[in-house]
Length: 275
Image (cartoon, rainbow, N blue to C red; front, side):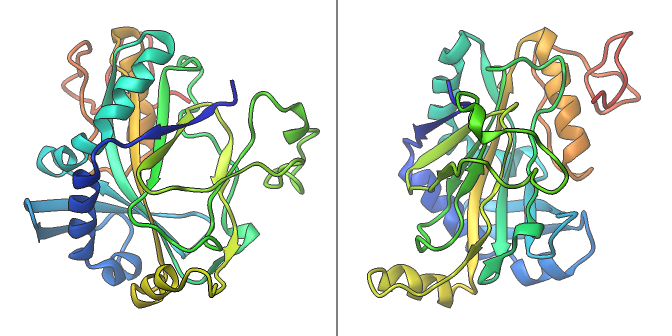
């Protein structure tokens, strides 16, 4: 196991609908506005509302999170095959909890603008219980960044980690995004956006034209998929509530309860956002 696998989307129409929705988002305002601001637009399927999360290390990245059930439901079609595939990994029931667009704006992303991290870093979420699925909203030029990841089955990818090398794989492992497929990352897999510098390639004139005309936007669909089992769902929700804007929707599994004074699933022994 590497901690990463490619999963077919299975819903090309759903991806196109999301692309049409993204086209009406006020992306410039979303980059220049206040963190956690909400934006409601009239999309092809009706109103949709997103909350903006910014990056701690780069002003070139934004995460646009679905804020309500009507908006999150627009991601259900493209998530369905991933949910079914990931449920078979360890025989766990899985569900889509949250979703967003991940946007990089600009012709480059420097090494110090993207950091190695895990998405589901909770001690009580074991391998195979939580995943992030990332796929391109539209095709982009090959020089535009893919995904750096540190596979579990290659010890050379880690070595001795220091503050100077923590973002540099000792062996370069790059996943290049492919339209129609999601990169399914286990929640415990270290990864980051691949730094890049866009270069126009004569072999990709249409992709380059579209990337330039669209304002140099690299857009991914991001699906937060995790177990709906009672003993795990509460921790999945806690992680997502800690990493998303307050207004973002995190679905509740039917197998857990929510304390009346908390947005997180609880038990008597759990803190609200346990790391």
